[in-house]
Structure formats: C-alpha cells, structure tokens
Image 1 (cartoon, rainbow, N blue to C red):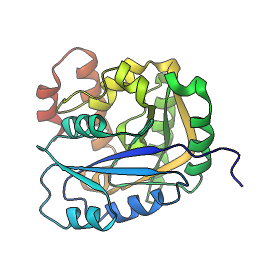
Image 2: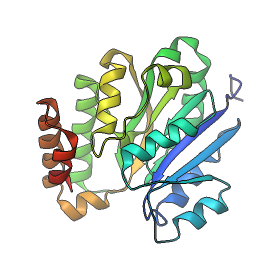
Image 3: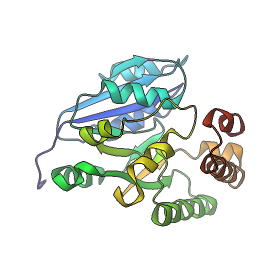
Image 4: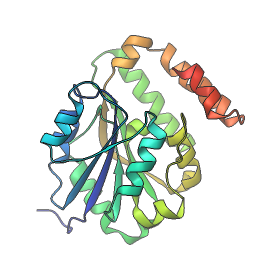
Length: 230
C-alpha cells in the first residue's frame, strides 16, 4: 500500500509523428493512482499520433513544430499542482509511481525539480557505456536532459517562467535556472528509444550533443546551434 495520498498530476508530452512509441509511454502513465491530465502538444504529426492521443483521452494542443514552444504551451495549459514533462519515446519504469508519490508529498520539494535515470531500450555494450556517461553528467554537472523527464511543482515552474520557446537547449536552459543543487535524481529509469543513436552513431550523436552544449555555454544563440544539431 502506498504511504502517500496521490496528488493531481499534469503530464506534458510534445509529439511529432510519435505514433510508434507514444502508446508505450502512455501505458506506463496509467499506473498513477491520482488524477492525471495528459497533454499532448503536437507539432504537426502526419501519422497516427493524434488518434493515439485521442484514444488515451488526452488533451491535444496543436502548435508549430519545435520542442521548446511545444513544452512552453503545454506548461501554460497544465492545471495540476505538479507538472511532469516527458518525451514521447520515453517509458517510465514501474517504480516511478512510488518515487514520484513520495517526492510530491514532501513540501520541501516544492522549490526543487527531479528527473529520472537515463536508460536505453538496447542491450548493446554501447548503450551501457552511454548510460554511464549520462549518469556522470547528471552526478557531476547536475544536468539531466529532456529525455530523462522533469517533475516540477507548478508554483516553482511559474516562478522560473517555465520553458522558453527555444529551437534547441530548452531543457538545458530550464535546468540551469533551476540550479544544480535543486535537481533531484530518481532511481527509476526513463527508458528511451535508442533509434537516434543507432541511426546517427553511438559516438557521433553524443559528441554532437556535447559540442552543441559547449557552444551554448559559450553564448552562441540556440537558433544557430540548431542548424548543427539536426
């Protein structure tokens, strides 16, 4: 039996042609024992994404393509006291319910944020090495990315002015405003699709991501960095 009363939760998921992975993402969210508001912010899907969202009784918000502005719109629309931002190709492990439930019960977390442990749906040694690299980044730099989800209280999110409508680095931008010492890492895995790493290369994609992060830290505008990231 859970040792907490489940709070209301608004879950924001930006989508773009996500019909293949979205069902698994949504199925994992059904375990939450409290009230859930699922918000699908779609950037112009041409596949069955909208039908999947409708079948799941999710609210669908159409918007222009761009994860930053999709997250910003979803955050503005959300009504729950706690907001959970997820990528459509991310599936939370079953332990997420208890971890999130206990976290939201503690009022000291109203001015913090939390993310999940990065994991890939691939059994290769390359995937395990990448997971270790991300764990190091989170532990030393306090910098989880958007594919690890983000749980944050509504009041704190509003205090920080939420996600900005950036073409890239919207997750890094918000995490930096939250502050390294105010980011809690859950043990629960956020299992993410490894497709982009298989497609772009196990070393090439992380190296490109790191280079983009370096450029952002140097002050290069995200709209310029986005051209290199694609």
